[in-house]
Image (tube, rainbow, N blue to C red):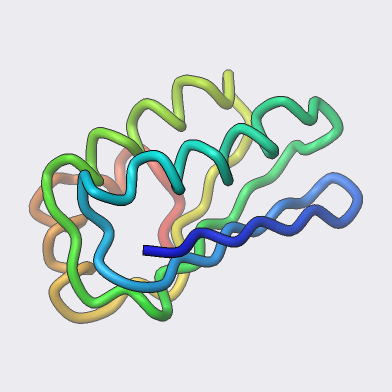
Length: 99
């Protein structure tokens, strides 16, 4: 999996590409560290447009990221298909804004 981050002003975007699984945890952490460490960022969007599979480890990574953001906004965007189903079953819409 690839995770590319971009920061513009107070908004950051991380675009994921590939299977979002435990094997991608180092890449995900690298991309998210850039955002978490930048205290000017108040909003983070994680773009799932190019993700067609995720496992329970990915859910855990998202929960940890949410904690590390210390109340700053985290949105999950472009979730579809199986990925959307996994997020729905896990009730992630109660934790994250899903667009």
